[in-house]
Amino acid sequence: MVSQTEFDRVASEILRDVNAMMTKMQTYKKHLQYEVLKYATTEELVDVKYCKYNDNLVKKLIALAGEEYSDDCGGLKSLYSASMAVATIIKEYGWGTRFLTPDGLYEMANLISNSLLRHSDVLNDGNLKMKNPAYEIELYTHFLARTEDEIKTVGFMGIPIRSLRKISYPHNMVGISIIITQTQKFLLFIDNDYGRLVVTQRTYWGKDVNTAYELFAQDKALIIEGKPKYFDTDGYMIKSSKFNRVLVERGIDDNELYIATSINV
Image 1: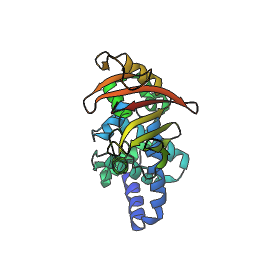
Image 2: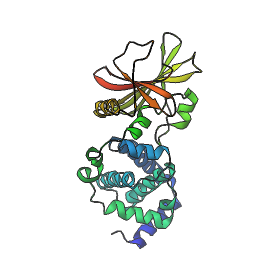
Image 3: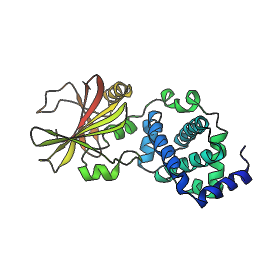
Image 4: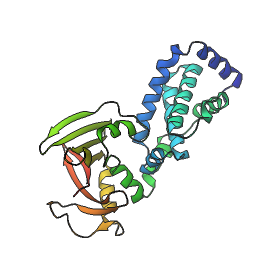
């Protein structure tokens, strides 16, 4: 257990010249923000979207911070930086500022330094859970009916989107490519003739793509019988409280599976 006297002493040293440690804190925070997405369940991501506290996701952040801190070998200053990074992410998720207080940072430091949580028991817990169609739909339709400005403002599950790669397509369409991690990406299609809104969202989400596609297809409460009138597709239609109905298709692009969801069909 970290001594509070020692932790407070290091905290005082850092706060006297916070700029000296700012780069390390920002590096920790950025790494954890993206790394946790590899292990977060869709339910946890949706809780971030709606600012609903999720203890499992906090535990994953702590586990990852513990690994980062132990690899760094930077002593108490590195532990303080890791604690500040996790506390700031929790605040940005809309889950409160308790861990940003002196007592909260000390509590977080002990959680990180004492953490024996590792990939096998915390980070991969999502593999053991049944997926909930309602949460999966939130992921695979997150950007639908948004403008380009709204995409930048809303971001993705607590992570701001700072750079977009735009691609021109025929029929007055614009594509927007967003890379979250190496295996988690989006390709959005904006229809300039449909209010400049996203009408199709392709979601590249690794092996989860097939699971989600089959999950929707097997949910009789979701499925709408029949095919879209003007589309030749092997996909299916599902009900949506937000969009009335959504076309769901599965495809492959450069050997990467994706689910495409479309409105206005």
